[in-house]
Amino acid sequence: MSNNISPFHFPTLPVDGGIGPAKAPADKGFTETLRSAIDEVEQLHADAERHVANVITGQEQDLHDTIIAVEKADLSFQLMMQVRNKIVNAYQEISRMQF
Amino acid sequence: MIETRMLTHLERLLDVTAARQRIVAENIANVDTPGYRTRDLDFRAALSEAGSLNALEVRGLVERPDGNNVDLDREGLLVAANQMQYRLGTQLLRTEFRRILSAIQETR
Amino acid sequence: MSIFNLLQTGAAGMSAQRRRAEVTTANLANAETTRTPEGGPYRRRQVVFEAGRFPRMMSAVAGVQPPAVTIREVVADPTPPELRYEPGHPDADAKGYVAYPAINPVAEMADLMGAVRAYQMNASAVQAGKQMIQQAIDILR
Image 1 (cartoon, each protein chain N blue to C red):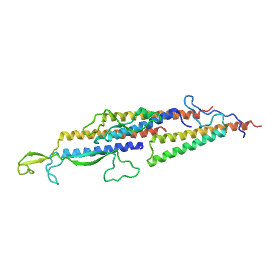
Image 2 (cartoon, each protein chain N blue to C red):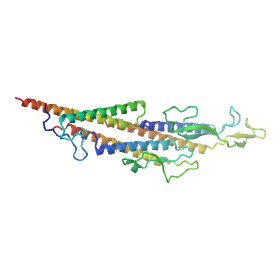
Image 3 (cartoon, each protein chain N blue to C red):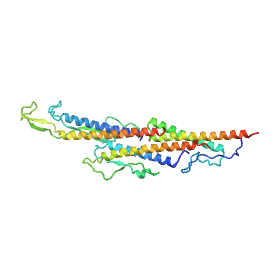
Image 4 (tube, one colour):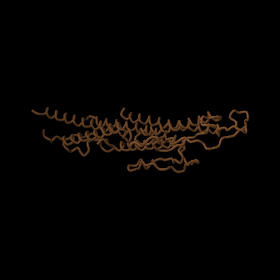
């Protein structure tokens, strides 16, 4: 499929800095955005695993660091799923448009 | 990135509060150790981004003949205060995570 | 250091204070003991606290932190015994004096109360640590 479909907005919170895949402004293509979202997920997941391993070996600084890492990994996964779902929906709409 | 200013502040608050509680516990454990001096964090400084979590000696405490200056009243108050602060931090953190989640899931 | 260290610190404090209470109680119980297996009256004993070192019989283990506080040793009070004139007493010496431990029950009682209070404060620290762990877990609730 071609890439000239106008991209959609990512959820951002007005007051604070935005949430969303790092370095993927709204005018990049879908695949770029999804790619950064996936990278994010992998990185945060690896972080969370490392923290959990540290808790088990007793090297963890503080338990809350682990909890926060786990939660961030989970949220980035949710974000990625949202991105994926929107892309899938967009493609489905487009394929419906074909004659 | 899953990161907001609020998250960063709260993470730091929890780190500092936990570090302070550890130091207070050491003070309490050493209330009868000859020559032991009470330690604490410079709390306000520690909260800033580059603040240090190193413990410093506390000034102005009464010293007993064996050189120990741990005041159980002071340490007891700090245990309670730190505990409440930590609880506040974790509750705010939970709220912030929920907020982020609903922003992510908001459909258009 | 981990947040679990908080619990270990409190536990070490509780241990040390408990030992202090034991020794003080033994002093109280033996305030009038004129005869011991080693000979002579009971000698008052007291504990010596020490910060941050492994106890003597234990060698340092790599990566393990020493306990926040330990009882380094239990020492005997060098104060000479109290002599009281009681000629009829089975432990009286040739001149009719009996040697009693140099123990002041009031002072020992105060020491014991101090140990109890310090023990409770350490227990509060442990309790606070447990609550903080639970609260961290609750972030995910």
